Image 1 (tube, rainbow, N blue to C red):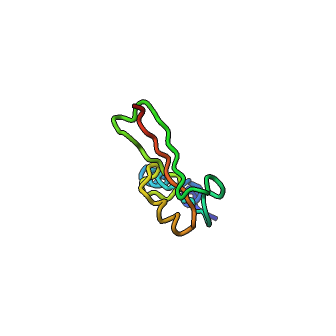
Image 2 (image 1 turned 135 degrees about the horizontal axis):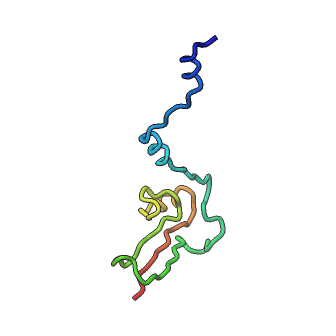
Image 3 (image 1 turned 180 degrees about the vertical axis):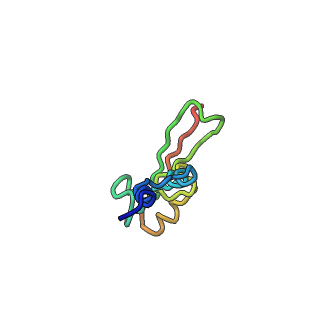
Amino acid sequence: MLCSAARAAAFTPLKITSARRAAESRRGVVVRASGPINPDIKKDVDKVVDSVSLNDLDGKKQVSYCRCWRSATFPLCNGAHVAHNKASGDNVGPLLVKASE
């Protein structure tokens, strides 16, 4: 039979430190497709890029958003789709958000 101190230790929940909680909240989900991400949209073009116009982009003329899920700067595009397209034969490209004139 366990002494009262041992019993208390055995049933005391682990304390989660704020550092551990912060580390766990930074974990991301890695999404990897085994083949093309874009199976049937605009397959007649080399790279599918769509654009949208907005009134204000905080002084920027254009912002590129990733649609291949491989960008190291996600959600912003860093051109990682180029390597993905070469490796998979896909034609996915970024979403361009342009400032309205």
